[in-house]
Image (tube, rainbow, N blue to C red):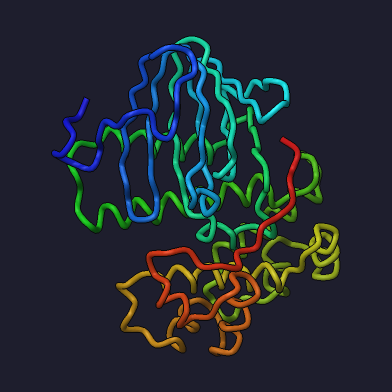
Length: 309
């Protein structure tokens, strides 16, 4: 176990968790990289009451339950088994957790506003994913490697870790929540490929719905119909991802030398007016407000309705 004070991985007490069944062993290690916080948690069989803090509703949690049996309970609802699995959930939900056997969890807590641009709507309730896909396993492996690394790391290390975790968490949301059809449906596969093209190429100002359709070998009319069935448009998804890139640039002090016009160009927008409209539509704020609010959360982040777990 790393010694507190020598680096930014530290042993902490039960984080905002109050035991309700004696005083079981709970060991938590934490690393903070900018706006991202990563934990590894090991605990014996016990039951806890989780009390949210005031700003918790501004964050999302990606929790990998690696071993042991974990159950969750909200208010008067029955206990629900949630592990082993990947649980994606908004913070700020008061709940009880029951651990049976020796349990191990790896958790990443990320700002809601940083991942809102990846999907049309963020889930308002917990999403339990028992089938871990390639990207899920890759995120867990990366988080584990980060926590196992000794030393504080440089400012560049922490920036890179923050950026990669946010990108991977956002991509998991896009993979898991961006499609409304069952896996194996040809329409779902086509739309997923189109979303991947948009995510990869959105900074190119020449990217158009026509180019996306050509890249996935579909007619534009057919692709637009698939996106319309999901309540969005190809152009709207391109704009959403460009706004996400612009927001990340505006919140990064390294890019303060760039004008708003340069940020717009770097993010794929043809002019500052298009940038401003997209930021207001998706994040409820403008470029200058984002820079002024750096370090805090910006109001107006779109939130979705509850999704079935």
